[in-house]
Amino acid sequence: MNILVLGGGGREHAIAWALAKSPRTDKLYVAPGNGGTADVARNVPDLAVEDGRAVLAFAEEHDIDLVVIGPEAPLVAGVADELREAGIAVFGPDAQGARLEGSKTFSKRFMDAHGIPTARYGSFDDLEEALGYLAAMDIPVVVKADGLAAGKGVIVAEDRETAEEAVRSCFDGAFGKAGSTVVIEECLTGPECSMLAFVSNGKAHCMATSQDHKRAFDGDRGPNTGGMGVYSPVPIVTADELAAMHDIMERSAAATASEFDHDYRGVLYGGFMLTPEGPKVLEFNARFGDPETQVVLPRLEADLVDIVLAVAEGRPDDIDLRWSEQWAVCVVLASEGYPGAYEKGKVILGIEEAEELGGVTVFHAGTARNADGELVTAGGRVLNVVALGDSFDDAREKAYEACNLINFEGKQYRTDIGKKAAAGREAWN
Image (cartoon, rainbow, N blue to C red; front, side):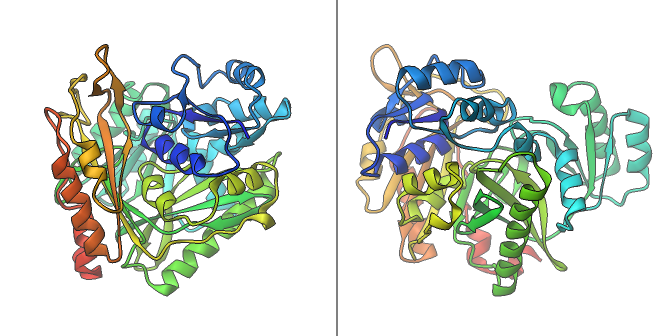
């Protein structure tokens, strides 16, 4: 098969890496790709991935059999719709299904309509109405820009002044059009946990649990980022919580079949808070998580091409998921200053040495080649250093050993990925 992957981050490198291992894969393209995807596929740096007509033209010209859409923006833009109408198999929901991520208000109303447990909320298009609702809320509170904001449109406000400032900044254009509608939620408490599922024909095949670390600095301090590290599975999840998350994902998948005009075919990402009342959904995403994908796919022991094609063709009963019993830990190496301003073009050394450690894979998130052919930084999150181990501690130690072998100017990373989970549930009390 000829396969096209849309996207250029660590998630897409992990997807391409897994697809490339399949004997069914012939030609593999990644658009735009990065310095790492170039090792397993042909990069297509000039393809406008949010332009459905452009993607369709490329697919037809290169005899593409399957398109796998990584990021949310092409999904929300309706790229999957354009391709499906032309008869090309697509892994990723249409624009309507992608609204589960593209509009937090739409997503919350979907949850309400189908009895999915989530935080109490209000959605507002008017500043004064939003501030009035906020005045009656307990603090802390969560303020969210309704639309896509590259993972930066969520503010957890620990005091009322910060909450009001967050609401005003949304309406003042801090997140562009994404903040023209604002969602204000109660702040749920407990550990977070992600569960992704392959969804097709209203059926969900749940993946292994994972836990992301959003805050920039050790101790869960600093601003929210796109993710500074992650591990899988999540040892603190109880059997009852796991069963509840499976049930929620399965009911949500069934709801897509009754709610939407067309079949939801792709990944449904459930971001959960493990509250004292049970798991509740913080958010839905309409695609593979980043960096969750980087620890989930290395533990997958089935052929990813078989799975995504079954999803794309509406054959959920043909999906067979098998998971390694090994643990996976991923540490993100970022540019100095991230998630704020940062410099690019720093030469990266030591990846080959890191990958010589048994069980270590380095996925590229923000890298490129300079004019001299050197691998250099090209983004805020630069590398995802993933280690597999027979125990949580083994994987964690190996990941940090690999991180120490990789160097570039300004390298920053958290040193406590997975530390709380290793300490047990009481670490969240």
